Image 1 (cartoon, rainbow, N blue to C red):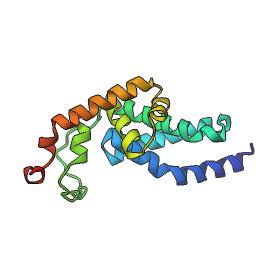
Image 2 (image 1 turned 30 degrees about the horizontal axis):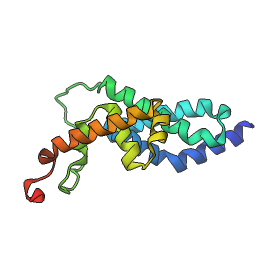
Image 3 (image 1 turned 90 degrees about the vertical axis):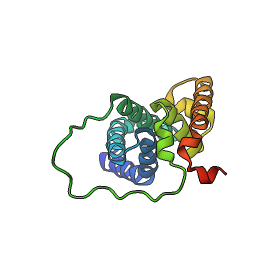
Length: 165
């Protein structure tokens, strides 16, 4: 494959799929800035592997790379240091919509967040999630069940009481 052609194809792919991959990374790491870093790192790995990939497997490879990078980043934790200097402006507060999806996802382990993100936000099958994460289908099913049980157990904490009535 010629270099300019490869770069043009990769750029087109990144523009088309980058936002979806970033959203998936966000659902696992729970921070848009970290999700940007995760997506960028995954795209770097994808770019290096691009000449070896078959067209029909590019999406699966990209999704798996992003999810693996996001899980690794979430497990490592944040490397931030407290400071006495405040930033110029913080991010705006999200509107209050009742159920706090962010707080709900924070209750789950990184792998469970990845499974929930792929299964319910991206609407992938159990087999596709298992393939993307490199785990058995039974693990996807059991981790999904555990994640849903955790969310159900904390439902009253996540939804204002007037909405439950």
